[in-house]
Amino acid sequence: MKRLPILILILARAFAADPPPAEPVMKMFPLKYADSEQVRKLFSSYSYPMSTNRDFNVLTVTAPAGFMTQVEAAVKQFDVAPVPPKNIELTVYLLTGADAPGPPPLPKELQELEKQLIATSSYKA
Image (cartoon, rainbow, N blue to C red; front, side):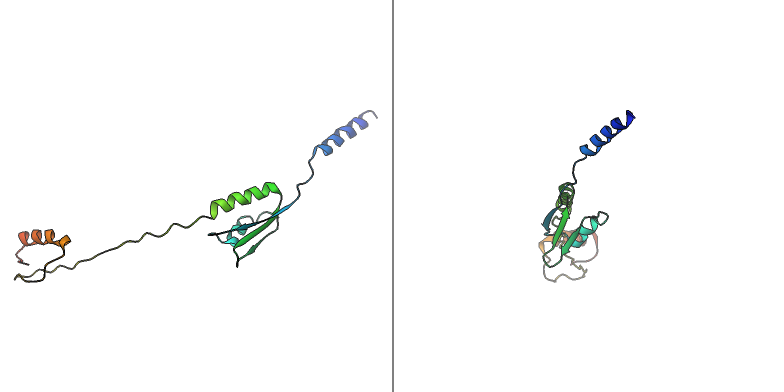
């Protein structure tokens, strides 16, 4: 009989120590570069309500503040500007050999190459 009040006292302390569930907070995350639907899919395994608006590219989340920090971190990580593609300029010259001199002069970049080719071959131009 003496054990029952002690058990009740221990259980009362255990239930009283649990913090009340956190109130959900609603927050909108405007995205500049990432697709809001793709970011929402990252959190599809969680049961918190999340919606997207593709016209404005906005993710709306209703969740406790602890989960909201995870969403903010993901938005910062994935909403970055894409790396611009590198532009490459390629110039191709077609060289032909001739037995007689007389074609128009070559561009400055190729004049040294022309001298080397004339010196090592039977062509004169």
